[in-house]
Length: 64
Image (cartoon, rainbow, N blue to C red; front, side):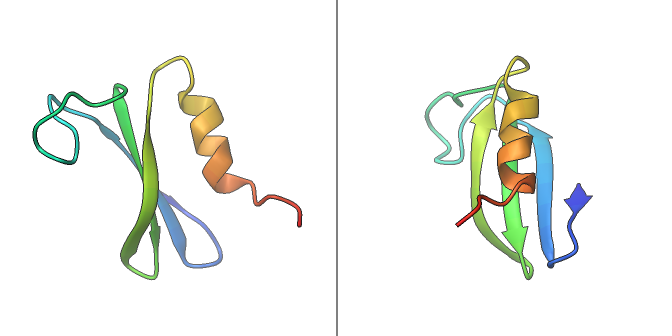
């Protein structure tokens, strides 16, 4: 788990055998969860090849 200063957290887990719907295969080896103030607000799947890139998406705020 990565805790950020603004109350956000990024959690990285192994995706397992099924996706979050409980039926289909996950789209990658890892499941990345974005949590803010204790609530799950987003996430994505990642492979070993793009895990670093996907984590950066959560850590770096886009410039308005």
